[in-house]
Length: 363
Figure 1 (spheres, rainbow, N blue to C red):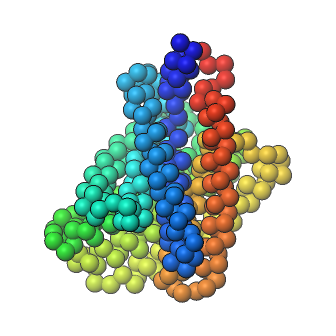
Figure 2 (figure 1 turned 120 degrees about the vertical axis):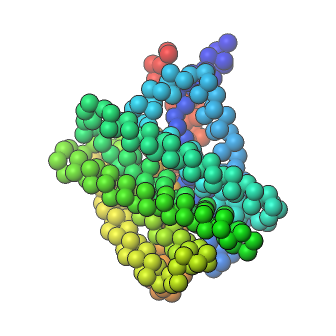
């Protein structure tokens, strides 16, 4: 009975933020695979991370679904929370990232037919879910009588990140249909453009509000330090998605040249350099004041940095500037260390139940 009670409590308090681990692990897998063209030994690690990410997704989806049926009251409570509501979208983003893992790393292990059919299913699911949870999170903020500065942080940028990463998978889906069904490929490309535009505009709007909060009010507690890194998500995703959208748009006949959009992507990436140095400075400031305690928010370090590292490598491949390659290597070394710390501490947190059941929880 004790095991059943603990399991029920773990499901009741299951955080939607857990899917940030799928996003981060999948992002790291893709980074390793991309770099393996020059550092061949990384390929085996990308393949290991692919299957680890599949396992993570399968394990996490069980309590995620059960919770909607057994503890719907708690789900509604989280959906109405000014911070927690933003993390529901991490599940469909995890789906999208896992889909990119299949296309990038999976061909060695899965048939092209399986990857193609799974890819479009995951893309459709990602589009519908990201739109729903993104609107729900925004509506939740708008309907609130008052949103205090204590709950205003960069977690609000998760929805923009979600919309911006849709093309990461959509580009693979559209590319598959170009030889046989141009109208369908063009439709997928157009939907990707819509999501990219939505995410980009939300990034501008919400980041302005969040920055105003930090200028006008005291900094949050150190546990919120990792959420500053979410700023890198829209930047990195914006660069990679824009380059991919430009390439597919040209292939389906919507563009005659991609050069201007690629230069725009590089300009966007340049802002990422400032953002990376800024979040580093913020993190060091917190460390000088004391340690940053581990929590699920640590996974906010991982995916934004992963997608920013991929964007840096994409810019390197386009410009052939060696300094950008070595900058990417620095990012990946930091990313790998942060992922290892987050993964090990997550396992420990599960074993000790600290990340599963809140203290003094009898509900």
